Image (cartoon, rainbow, N blue to C red; front, side, top):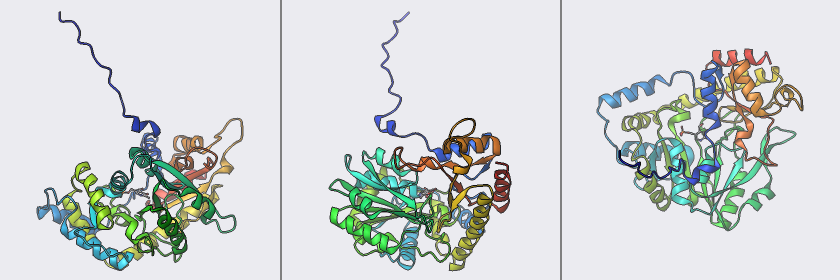
Length: 403
Ligand code: PLP
């Protein structure tokens, strides 16, 4: 018998992973499946994507766009992104040097972090924040610094304090992340707010990573202002976008980053080795989707507005206090009425979300997952997603009525 070789102990994870858990949103989706619950947790439509996109993608495969594309994206898609950026965003981008096609905006964001933020630097996040940015910060070795938005007592609009913003910036600030329209609050940043952020970015030499993936989902006359079109931000903004939300194809994983050539060169280096390229036939299909007429975007926003209004009413009827979103497709709602201080019953958002999915049959996201733990965090909010069929929303409202 040969003596047993001495086996070195395996380290099950790198130290980079110690600071965050798996996605709460995606966990809620798994729980929804287990409990056969209506899923208002994760932001993906449960209705079919536009028929034009199905046709475009099928044709792209039939036409043999099936091999690796140029790493930065097919020339056709990059040209289409450049013309759309000029027409809709007021951003002039050279498709050869300023645009990178990625696997969703998720990849574009981590490429920006890894390519442009040094370990030990700081990144400013407005909280509540879309949950990916916190792990993105830790994976790149950066420290997230938070600026808290709060609902205005009179208007219900989510606003930030200018002094708190000024205090967040400093010599270590590498970048500020702005999401507009915002997930989870539905806030649409105004040109004035962006101009204020621009002033601080110029003073401290900071970049902006602008997540604009809900740019076409706007309500009540809200206007989308692209950060890269704001004076003082043109040469320091990475504009991140994707086909996921605009065309209802979250599974296609086609996104992009637009940035001045020197910034693009850095994030392209990361993208090259991270994923090589996004799926080629789907890039070709998205090129076609970008040519859809204006009526497509207006129709989509109108349908989402009807869904928003339906869910707002349903949530109020079920005892929540929803904050009306101006864009994107989520509603943050104050759930205090369903929380108990002591005794039997849910005492915080996490317990309430668990009760909702297990007993009531509706999966939602606890608001605390959009905050860093601590004094500015909140544990009395829930996020409800409304990019769902009318019957899904009706079923959810009916079930919530049993609370
Ligand atoms: N950014 C925000 C603000 C989101 O809400 C989401 C998805 O919900 C994403 C990025 C992910 O987008 P993609 O599918 O393009 O990776």
